[in-house]
Length: 278
Ligand SMILES: [Fe+2]
Image 1 (tube, rainbow, N blue to C red):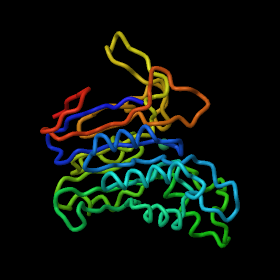
Image 2 (tube, rainbow, N blue to C red):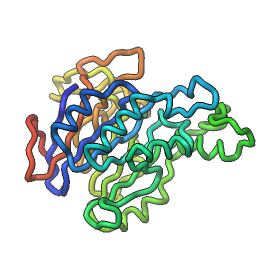
Image 3 (cartoon, helix red, strand yellow):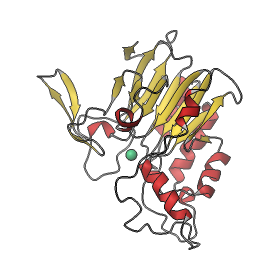
Image 4 (spheres, rainbow, N blue to C red):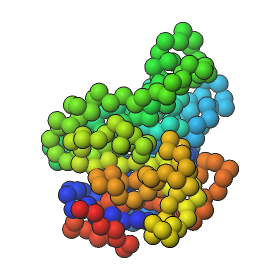
């Protein structure tokens, strides 16, 4: 794992961006967080793996031991906000309540201020459309299973994320940070929105990375939702910060692409491998 530090001069607090841990042991992440002590921790999706639970009647989050340890560990370091990625599609209300009981704030297409009722920072969480579409479908089912098996209609026709609440989010006072697991949502749904900072993961850095002599930059090979040679796989793009993520959930190994824990620092704090952004 590498630690990457970005300075964003307008950002009023230090932030750790944790993404794509996929229920893998997170000791290195937690050790780094305890050492760096960010003011805010943002978990921008894919903290579990997408398989439904193996035991009937058992909560998915209870089977995701490492994810719970991560949430608990983060909450002991700093206020922690969590948004939902595509791998969280099956989580139900009991799962989310369990997460809350570990001390984190889950943002499912909603926002919250820090401190509660304060006017300095407001965090919002834009859930993956895969999560939102399954929740909508499940509410219409008469079965009492915790996780009814989705049929072909659930994700047919490319479901859209729920963006209506963002109008209200934009009107909130203070520095507005949006957790948006999917980086490809930013050009598609978030252009011209009055949001100070957007943080994403999901692309895993493009899985295999190579150095393009022509462009004089490292590039990813493939990312879900963006296809081959994706543009949004890591780094700073205006007000958008993307982490390469902290784990790997495919049989295809990462190449030239170590897992990454991102820190976003205000102007008066410095990291060790600094990258700058206005
Ligand atoms: Fe993802």
